[in-house]
Amino acid sequence: MQETFALRGNVIYTPECGRLELHPHSFLVCEEGKVAGVFPALPERWQEIPVEDFGDRLILPGLVDLHVHASQYTYRGLGMDMELLDWLEQNAFPEESRFADLAYARRAYEIFVGELVKSATTRACIFATLHRPATLVLMELLEKAGLPCYVGKVNMDRNSPDTLRETTEQSLAETRLWLEQSKDFAKVRPMLTPRFVPSCTDELMNGLGQLQREFGTAMQSHLSENLSEIQWVSQLCPNTRFYGEAYAQAGLFGGDCPTVMAHCVWSGAEERALMKQNGVFIAHCPQSNMNVSSGIAPIKSYLAEGQRVGLGSDVAGGAHLSIFRAMTDAIQCSKLRWRLVDQQTPALTLPEAFYMATKGGGAFFGKVGSFEPGYELDAIVMDDSALPTTRDCTLAERLERVVYLSDGQPCAKYAAGIRLF
Ligand code: GUN
Ligand code: FE
Image 1 (cartoon, rainbow, N blue to C red):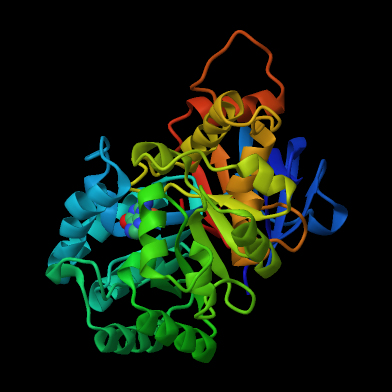
Image 2 (cartoon, rainbow, N blue to C red; image 1 turned 135 degrees about the horizontal axis):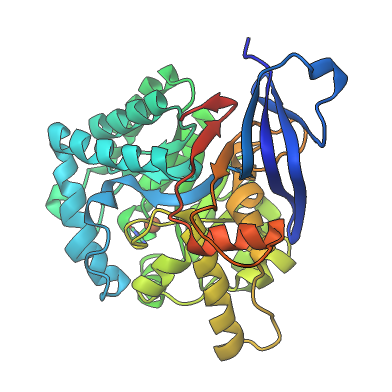
């Protein structure tokens, strides 16, 4: 049984999109790994529990990265002047090929997991590579670090270099074996990961759909990211009316298959309607969308129409692992969209970006990303004393400054009720 304890400090969270809950100098009580409540004074029945007093610091829900490539962390910040398909061919595919070498993979994943632990992110949906043994190493490292993440062994059986391609049969057999081997993990969960439609034949996609129904696994992929990619998909799949239909035809597009689709920059009306109907999560990755020239996703409109939206770093399409950075990028991008594309739709606000980074993306993991009672306690403690100002800032202003100005590293971090540091 986990100990009951309280964290004391300035508690901030967002129970609904656009609204901040601000609790100065309050007690956040954790019972059995879950939030029991936020109180101005410790209630009578908890007088004896240990209290970690964080003074005047900010206590926020852990941030959620709905889309990141662990195997691309090694070359962050390189090739950032290219467009998606060239960038994949010249940067992503050669680097991911190296993960056939287990020693290399371990070195790379140790760096990635070390940085993820130090960051403000408590949960993530992670792409590995197509290599099963290396993917298991990544899962072991995350499990040991106490980060309750989803990880995907990538599937690719076409339009990829010889060094990074499986046969359809291999891809399905390796995925089945990997799903079986993944049952031993307590915190880390497997997630089916067809890379994107150009990398997967219909036969592979259908086989993954069967595995999904057999194992009840979640899935992640890329959707409607970049115009050249979308045009290619329409040629590869003449029997589809829109990109997402290629996943839907295999039963890999929400509904009984919990799904995260990265990007959705160019999703049309039919695709949007199906995403909403099936509860597909959109991972908005604004920095990547700029770096590989994909475009500006209509996120404010997605929120207004009731789509489920979280934020992603998309390292290494995005150069930065920080989800604070993704929040500021999302706001800045939405301003450009308002200025250049659609004057009817206002820009995103800070509380909206904070919601996507916490409860919006957290919903994919269950009751995660908020401090409402019953939520798993994922918390980060941010010290903003290194951001001096002459002004007497409100808590909301202090949150905004931390998002825009801090180095993104908390001074304490909890995931599912367990302190990581
Ligand atoms: N589409 C297919 N693979 C990738 C990838 O690795 N990164 C991004 N941003 N898009 C992709
Ligand atoms: Fe990606």
